[in-house]
Length: 175
Ligand SMILES: [Mg+2]
Image 1: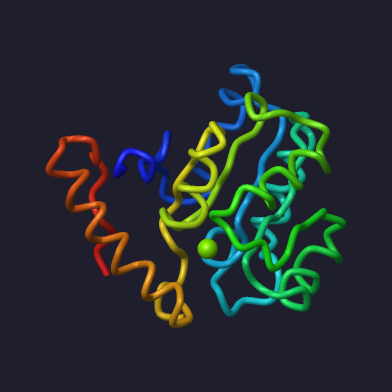
Image 2: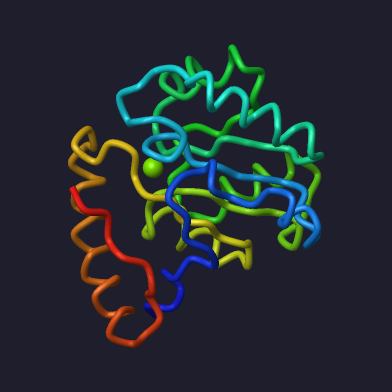
């Protein structure tokens, strides 16, 4: 059960993802979380660095869809000025939003990468569909809502268990 929570790859930030390598391995689409993955949960807009990253993603030949459990207004304010497709109120880890994003991109499970900061929504949802899951460290953990804070508690238990099993190799972020 705990293995379903194990990301295929762990990096500090989206900027640490080796996009060229993913492309070489046949991936063509990125389904990314928004809050605490791309920007802090309370940051309304993309940073210049992130805008440059989106451009690189596109230039390399990837499609990208933001899939967020947050509401229409939050996700739309962020994504629309950047001309990025999105699925809001996604109810991750449910399968439906991931399938919807793949449909928007015209891609299948073998071509799609999921990027997110939460094991119980992003990683679990992606893994269950057989997508390549990438876990990033949350950007601003203090800005999280009660639901996410609750998920983090379960996350810590899962990480401790995975670590005991010798499957979780990354150090926790010191804060
Ligand atoms: Mg998140």
